[in-house]
Image (cartoon, rainbow, N blue to C red; front, side):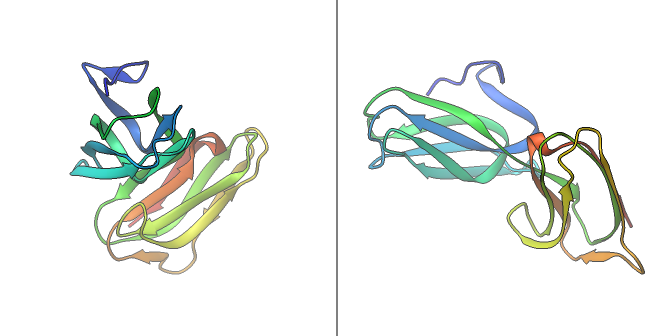
Length: 170
């Protein structure tokens, strides 16, 4: 597939926050796969095989910070279009840390911010819900020593649920 469109530059995509890749098939592509090559939330090389959909959308399991290529393994039955989902992830701190607090400014859409350890799909240790009222804020202070994240603090969220997120960790 040729990588083009508003997010592309020089035949690849670099995102500000890691996102899941979507592959929309106009035909029945559930018997073929698509190989997505890029980097993960830490900037490490990553390759994922995504099974196509039957006149629908297939979504990667992994989050990609960059997308270098998407290759169909087989012949697509119709037009195929790649994009990114509203699911996003980022790394707050890559090592052992204690989350002491978070400050979030909501949008009009309610949603959750999930704090995980080990990776964007790791174990959830804390969640904060956005209020769903434009510019409403949440100020969460974790008492005592905070929440221990033994293998990094990663955050997973839906892009439209908050404007800003500030975290405090030690």
